Amino acid sequence: MNSCAVIIVNYNTGKLLSRVIERVIKAKGIDEIIVVDNNSSDNSMELLPQISKIQSYFRKTNAGFARSCNYGAKFAQSDFLLFLNPDCLIQTQSIAKTLDTFNDNQDVGLVGVWVKNPDGTEQRATRRRLPTLWRAIKTYTKLEKFARFCNCMAGVNLNHQPRPKKPKLVEAISGAYISIRTSVFNEIGGFDEKFFMHFEDLDLCKRINDAGYKIMLNPNIEVVHYQGTSSQSNQGVSEYKKQSLQRYFHKHCSVFSSYVIKAISRIL
Image (tube, rainbow, N blue to C red; front, top):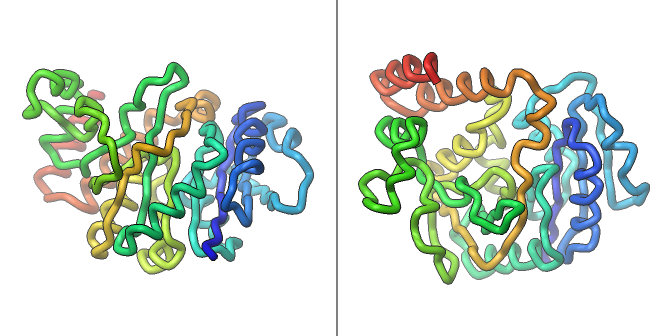
């Protein structure tokens, strides 16, 4: 029988963290709940229920999202890992349906779900393509908002396309809900810890693709993501995002693309 560990990295998420945990506790298919706190200054961790299924780990500094995800994964004993944002509310059947998706598709290494905004609309990063220079330019100049009129204007995000009715293969998914086979996660070396925050999810998707595994989006599994809850208390988010954008292109794209992106990020 499949086992799944939910790993949540927290940083000043407030009362929303306890709501997320409450949903996870009620979910079917969970064996472990691992919460890693990145030296929060609020009382979010104090609000968690004291039950044996929850393992809490406290870091002395804000080690970044990628590094703390890897840290939490070291304690997991399950066949599958779910990296869940601390501001992402799941449904009772979300994880069980995710595991079913893996079982029905043995060549799939990572499964993403339909991520909604609190108002019920599709969140922009739910289904994505891996960044290229031209795609990134269209996304960051906001030209991609015209993709609903012409697909040629599509950037990294594909939220202009009709919602699929059944699971489909994609290049990348939202980082709010990342479910992955533990064997695949270990094979590719987990998250790249040089990404402090942002782009670590796209980098993970890129390396999963490069390793020969497929990424699947299941639009029939819905979650609600209160995007940016933790970021509100982190003054360096904008700079971290620029650094991560540059690192992604330096790591995965041409030298020319890397230089262009570096120049563009200076004026973003």
